[in-house]
Image (cartoon, rainbow, N blue to C red):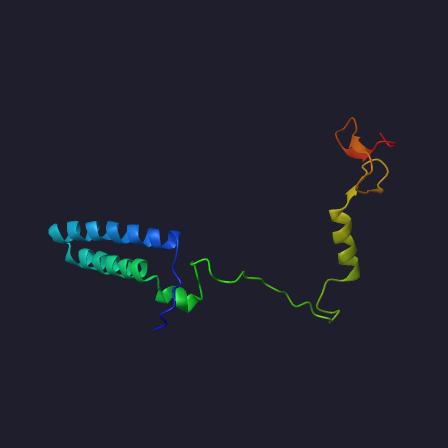
Length: 131
């Protein structure tokens, strides 16, 4: 068992509260004769209580999750393939760029950032000169 802490802060508080609630639920179910439910709730209470007091969780360790706040920032890097057949075609790339650009509804020319523009009578975005 790895003895490093991987449960901290709010996570420990939530686990402590869950342990308390499950303990109460377990006792009530055991008193009412629901032994299986009471036993399962008691096991859950013990598990969450262990996590809250020791600061270690085996599931967090298996999933490589650390809520102590001492872990490094996670960054995801994507590999871009140099193979031109795997990426989008030039025509598709051009259409994608064209869709992301704001175009004048009157003349069809792109409206670049900083250019004055506004709505026309039909509430379409146009150059100020095209209105």
